[in-house]
Image 1: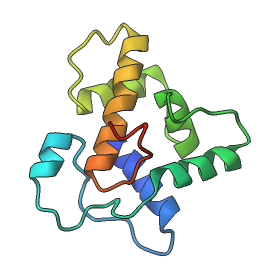
Image 2: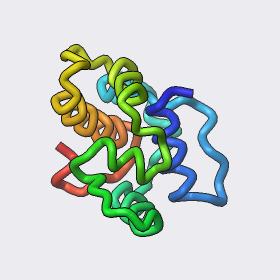
Image 3: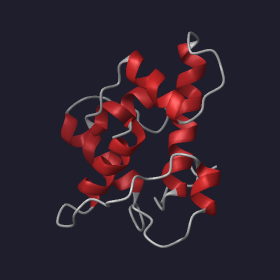
Image 4: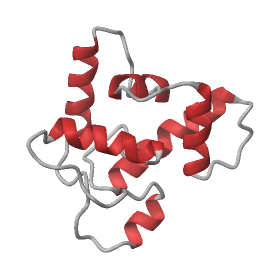
Length: 129
């Protein structure tokens, strides 16, 4: 499973633990997600902020998932190592310098939030753009 797919499955599973995870791999590319048929958006009606806030609270750590891809991944229990973030960047078609981890992380966070929204997740207005 892709790293982005793992992120989606963990969000979906936490939001709706009594339902099976979606069978289809979510689309990490927002443009491709919009072009896909609207049926079966894996995050339909999932309040991403509510789920993430709950996960951060349960973690007992001070995590700022709203601005940090590392904290987002930690809250979800996904490996947030540089190597995994580079893999995620490749999945999401990052074209910048992967050795500039600060720029890559900012880009990754924005892309992950956009891809979650494209897959049906509801984001707060400050993260939806």
